[in-house]
Image (cartoon, rainbow, N blue to C red):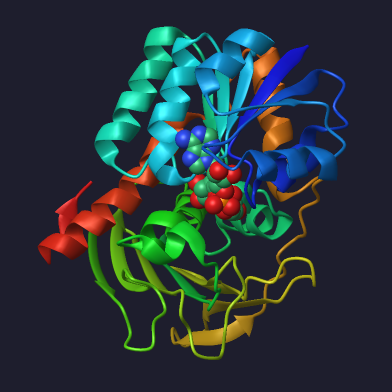
Length: 341
Ligand SMILES: NC(=O)c1ccc[n+]([C@@H]2O[C@H](COP(=O)([O-])OP(=O)(O)OC[C@H]3O[C@@H](n4cnc5c(N)ncnc54)[C@H](O)[C@@H]3O)[C@@H](O)[C@H]2O)c1
């Protein structure tokens, strides 16, 4: 039976509590907050939890004999929360992004290695059937060698809170999802990035809410990203709009999830005259089925890995490749030059 402490009881904690409260192999014993004890008590009442509230994670771990910590704190507290938990002998499932700096991210992976405990990082936006279907379609070779993957992310959320005070809210807090999805689709890691960040005059964020990035993947393919968190109209879904171009054709996914699939594909064939004929074949992308999606699916996979002594795709050792894309993009934007990853 895993005894769980949840560190951070804000917006995202609801997803985690909902995902685990009916599991029979774990129990939520502690809620840990920085100062707002009432918010934690409200969270406990909302979900009918009998957990105790603490202001200090180490104390909660000791008093409640915690074996598993959910790190749901804002990014700047991930290092302290995760390393405290690992050093106290707990495994950790934590929210993205792994850490706000690469130095901290590497130190957290080293801490997991040194303590022999597991640290898995939430990438809920990987766990959607459409992304799996597209990934499988690309793997099948229907488009041949992939040359370019393009993602366009345009939204205008008003969060308030820490995101509106960050230096690079779009890249540091959100782009991890799209960058991680690009790695997932390509099946490759990035080797370099050029990024330009900017903050439109109408932006309500202190830091840069917009960015354009060009990544080179290890097979030479390009992943280009256009993103805005203060879009004015023509918004995309949270999954972004994707276009993938390969040697035999192209595929387009509009990022729709619950409403169903909106695919477009076009294959290029060579006619008898030797001329290429675009649009000759419209391909069908087979649907993928998943019992659960997003947070629930990712957390299930984390538990399955922990119980079977294996590591999921969200293991910190793999997730570091996505956080490198984030942090190197920020470094490139600051330096105004292309940066190796
Ligand atoms: N995967 C997703 O789709 C998704 C969605 C939202 C948020 N997130 C991530 O979840 C994390 C939290 O985001 P949120 O929107 O829930 O934030 P929030 O501001 O709503 O809540 C943060 C909570 O952490 C607590 N806290 C702050 N410092 C702490 C500390 N040192 N120890 C314990 N508790 C502390 C605060 O009291 C608050 O309860 C962030 O890393 C964010 O990027 C992920």
